[in-house]
Length: 133
Image (tube, rainbow, N blue to C red; front, top):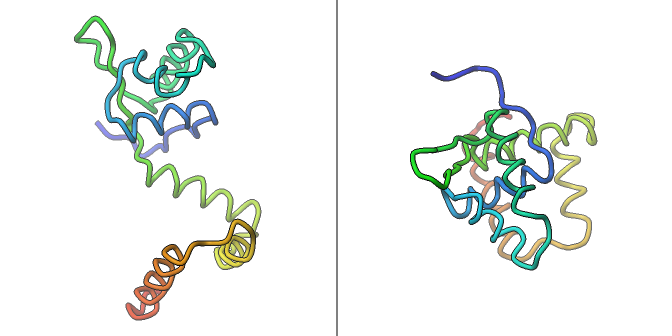
């Protein structure tokens, strides 16, 4: 069953957990806690509570077939990035993606040569493909 309603916007703490799940795949609460707070930081119960909240929001799915529940992200990294970027362009740059790009490339830290090459390749594909955005 899929819903057309977008999932809730993750908080900063929830994004930290999602990054672990995107990078590592499905994890137990302990595994997420160890990735995020190997140096101490927040407690295990804090991570557990956040995962429970995220499950209620639909940001993660929980497999409780085993004693230790395993969580996996139900939202993709790409879709989440696109959502945050779209909101940022709308709110901070009056809906102008070009203003975002000009600002990002003109500020420090500067884009690396490899990043600039990727940007040029993307621009060439967009320009050469005749696609209008």
